Image 1: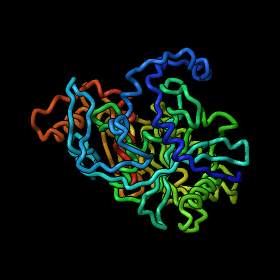
Image 2: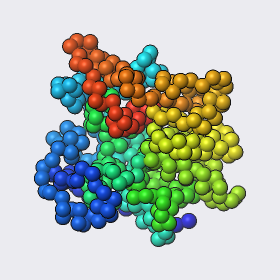
Image 3: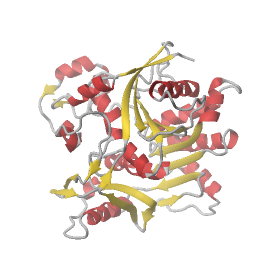
Image 4: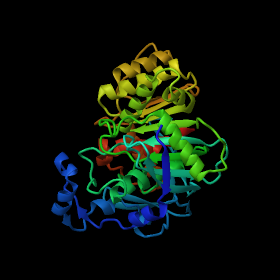
Amino acid sequence: MPKIVLYDVTDSTWRKLQSWPYGLNIPSHPSALCLKDIVNCKKQADREIGNEIGFLLPPHLKAREVTDWDPIDFKGQILHLQPTNAVHKMADGWLFLTDPILDGNHFHVEVNKNISANFRVHILRVEYDNVTQAWPMLITVAIPNDWDRDTSFVVYIQNPPQDQNFFRLFDAPFGWDWLFFHGWKPLNNSDAPLIAPARAWGLPYQIRRAGKKAILVIPQIPFVAEKTEQFRILSFATLRDLLKTIQDFLLPTSRDTNNPATTLVGFSNGNNILTNMITSNMAAPKGSPNREAITSMLERVIAFDPPEVQWAGNALIKACLAFRKNFRPSLEFRLYTHNWYDQGFAILFKELGWTSIPSKRFPFYVRPGNRHSIGYFPINKDGDIWEESGQHTLDLLNKGSNSPRWDRSLRNFQNIHLWFPALFMTDAIR
């Protein structure tokens, strides 16, 4: 196993994040060639103040009201909503899904006026003595200030960079876009999901709202992490060593454990990396470090909106259920998606004892015991749970008085896909 050395770069990366690139006008449809030729791309880009970066920055970061990476407390503050039908709204509170997450034909949303994540954040640079283990190069670690010896790890495998992603003109691991999208964005609230397209994630807030204590680990995912030898699949033995090193580095008085309890979370194409991690480590020889590590560590898998192609969702479901059947019967599997996966859903329905297959048109959510939960929330052109929930949320925030109509243009894949981690972590980790 590679020797792992960590360096705390929290302060220097915060200074970098605060120096955002004012309006580097990135081509709206960068080509794969452009992404590979970063130097020439930068030269060709116009140095102008554009709307894209400013739109994605949360108001409190723009106003320089934060001084470090730690998620701030929102007490008596108001949530700034993006324009809905050309109307700017201000709302007193922040939104979370509550239990049960469905209330009739919309999500069960509650407004919290005061929220506190109570996490501290460290940004860690990672070095390996094995040159073939090249990622993650940078890790965001959020630790609850009230952690105890039984606090487990949540490893969030997010969407790796794709050719169509914006803001990919800076070098990993310290480029501004990498720090923002692979660090700041998953940690913080900026605007409310369901009613604004800024797609707040706020994972520490959701973990806290669920009443759980967990150390959140967000590895920076490089380009095509699952495709090349240099960026080969992360073994569970290496993941175990990495988590143990983080534990020794940041929590030296914590319990001495060889196999830290771990929840793996995948989002979007990050689920492909998660699937490959599970299948490749299951295939390791019996008695090998990888087989021993995955069997001892992995307690829960959470999947947020895997890719819509059938093979991706089917492979994920089959891998998780095979691992539970053959290695760890207590594994919890939680899936939240707007996509329908024929083979995977058929297997899940059989496990649930369902004799008839529900309609693809209508949403459903089941959580039998703690073995698994399945949430299916499709996008329909002529009205669906997303539109109903968006309007319900506006009505709730406006207390039923002069509530504007929900902006139906928000009901598109780009918004709804990114609302999954922004909404469902509270339920998934509960």
